[in-house]
Length: 267
Image 1 (cartoon, one colour):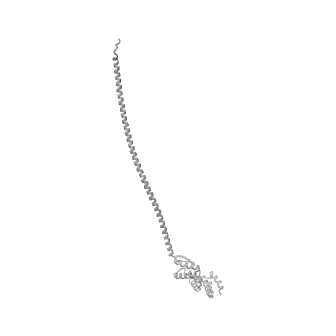
Image 2: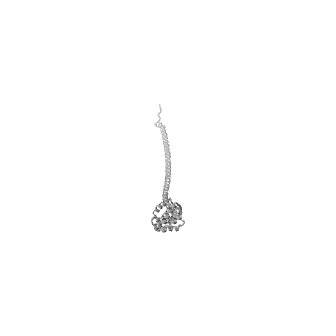
Image 3: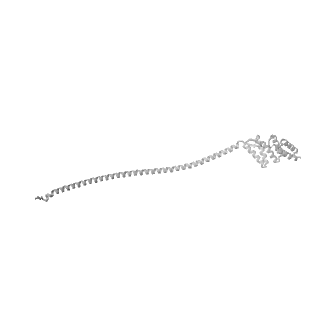
């Protein structure tokens, strides 16, 4: 017959086992909590570290941004300074251009004045320098005042102002006794005397001219004019003699041909 032990006795080992399991489970639960706490602590530490890192990065970024702002501000100031300098340079360039234009005008004015002075000097010099002229086939040098006096006398003669022409030619002969114009002056002086009907002086002047310049292109004309002067003075004999001299001395001249015609009328 089986012996029956009390239920409590039979349950005791089971209870003990349950207690052991429960204790083990409790111990395991305690172990899990510690691990979790450690994990949480580690996580918090990591989060804290990350926050610190983020703060450091943020601080570094803020410092970098501040440095960039400072750099940008410095760049802006530099640009403003450069713009101011450029404006100043532009102003200086404008002033220089204005000064250059003014200087150019001054130089142009100076060059013009110099040219005018040089031209005036050259004109005055030309008035003082001898010039070459050709009269009756002869070239010679004359002074400016000498040429002016001769031209003035000739202008009076051409204008029919015989009185002033006589005065001008006589004044010229006295003032320039060695002039290359002298032969021409004598010839035209005789014509001026004839024009004012001063036949005696005309006759004397024509004769003096032919005697001093027999090779002059006007010599034949002077002899014909002398004959006409003598005819005006009623000296027919003298006039015929003068025409005969003309025909003999200058037979190929136009004056000689005219003299032959004039000779036929002298009776």
